[in-house]
Image (cartoon, rainbow, N blue to C red):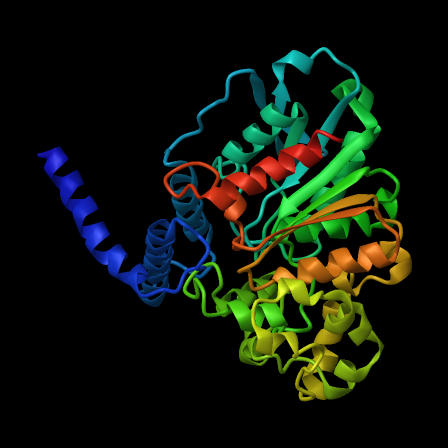
Amino acid sequence: MKLFYVVTFIVLMVAIILPLGLNVRVPEPVAEKTTLRIMEGCLKGVGYIIGASVALGLTEANSPFLKEVGNNIYRVCTTGRLWMAQTKGLKITDQVMSGIPVRVYEPESSIQQTNRPVLLYLHGGGWAFLSIGKHNYDHLCQKLAKDANIVVISVDYRLSPQNPYPAGLDDVTSIVMHVSENSRSLGIDPGRIAVGGDSAGGNLAAAVQLRPETRGKLSMLLLLVPVLQGVNMKTISFTENVEYLHNSINNPGQVVYFFHYMSLDHSLFNAFRNNLHTSAEFKKGKYRFLFDQRKYLPAEYIRSAKLKQMGNDIEQVGNETLFNKLKDKLLTPTIFPMMASDDELSKFPFTYVMAAGYDLIRDDAIMFAERLRHLNVEVQLSHFPDGFHNDLIMFDGPFKTDVGVRTVIDMVKVLKKL
């Protein structure tokens, strides 16, 4: 009888989820189109369930309960498992460093060594979701530690909206300082400390380099499809890619996570999403040249012939009053690293930047890499034309994709140089 209920539940879920993803547009070059449609249906279905739970008063938006639900669903979707599976040859331990929970992945073959390279990994999730405690990134961190033969420390930084900026960044800063100052007891080479992360984690990786106390302590950054700016919600990549996977990965509504992270008034959401949150004067001023699409976005990355002519032709509209309320946060480099000065960026160590062709924020990554290149910073831009936001976690599990496999292989190659 129990089996009957389980099978019935699965059939009902499939019947509900599959139609939700059937009509979605997926990137044409991706071979696993059905896989992406099922994933889209799953994520959209989960969104409906969460929305209904909030509407019925069963829980609050972004409550710990909903985060728990999201974390578990994410783990099952990316690994196909309800629990962590441990890779042979790795020692995995949960520790606390400077009061912050971390998960440490160590190749058993190097445990006795005293000069090991380390990657401090910062998970994505819009600064609001996912964690190390629910094994959301175990499969990726194990893969990187094993294949690159490095120590990986996954950081469970505090999340918004309960802990908005700068809480998460403070935690990351504390871990960088702890590892640097205790490198000998950890068996770490202080000259081979890397920080990397995906999406919001990539944002934090760039931001921690901009903190004065950490400068000179990092030898490598990995910025994987990073969130880097909040002043232009109509970049070429946004315009070109918004119709793909628009109910989940490329849903413009995800800008709400900016609001959680920066503790903004949600009444400003529509203006922000519609790119009306800055002023006409700002769009013509000096900051414009920090994200100049004509200068820093080579045409080869743009698929649409029409959009190749777009360049910096952004609408000269906005709201001066609204911008004055937001500008202190929008222009803060440790919130949005694209706003950093040339002098600040010139001090970056070797930086690996990953961009995905069908990602809304593709151009942010490309322009950031090009700015670093113009400043003679050693940088490697890896652009995956068939990639999409956070495809790197789809290198394994039920939603495995070829581009996900290739992105992780590329990361491992870079980390072997650490």
